[in-house]
Image (cartoon, rainbow, N blue to C red; front, side, top):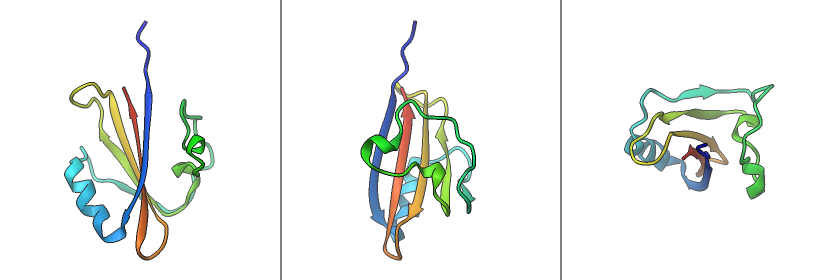
Length: 98
């Protein structure tokens, strides 16, 4: 039986640098803008709340999407979500399955 691990990474970037960061990841398709929080969301194996942060699905005004699935190397998938904290900073959420 193969065990899947969910990997989380969260950091802030200057809002002006978010697009450049996303371009370097090379998402398979264009990220989508979600203006409203999602009403029903499947519970993640490793939620961001373990890090004391809100889940990106619970936030309004989020750009999100799949970076890759399957990915090269050992990752099965990598998803990204970005939420603007204020005029100068955005929080970047990365969730991977290994």
